[in-house]
Amino acid sequence: MTNLEQYTPGPARGAQIRKDGEKWTLILVRELRHSPEKVWQALTDPAHLREWAPFEADRSLGMVGMVKLTWLGTPTPLETRVTRADAPKVLEYNDTRWELEPFGGGTRLTLWHNIDRRFISWGAAGWHICFDLLARLLAGEPIGRIAGAEAMKFGGWQRLKAEYAKQLGIETPNWPPQAAQNS
Image (tube, rainbow, N blue to C red; front, side, top):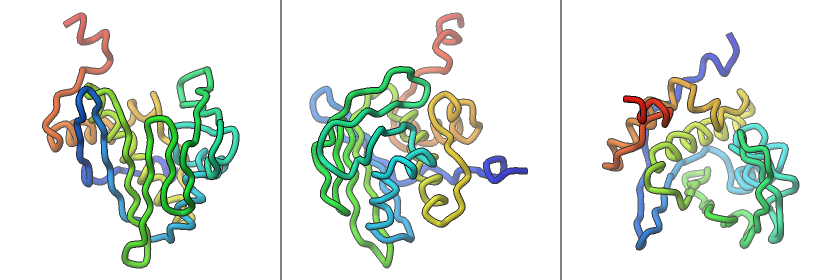
């Protein structure tokens, strides 16, 4: 059995949503046992991102400027602008903001992600799994990436999606969409 086969995500936790007009923001918080500098490297270095993130980057995200992000399951890279890279405190690009703050000998990592309200629990479940994979990578125990369509097939993702929907008080579309149309 591989480490990936042994992985089961914990319960949904640390999520909030904020609404500003038509804009919805998912906020996830995770406390990690590693320094902000080590977490920053995992958030910005392309080799580290390939181990846990739902996208690949063609360069480091640790500096302001253009970068191509290729989200898993999408064939075309997305031209993205890193608008803020204040190591090791704040990283911003597109609709995503990461905040890192020292906490109890480690780091409190906060993700702010603007997302279509219909898919907030989907995003929360996906990012939850990514955070787990990030924590394992930082601990020197990487198990490989679970993201995109692969994550949706993963049993833990379905459970997390339902838990986050309940926790956040939101309804989510059925998956796959065709099944909802044919019922």
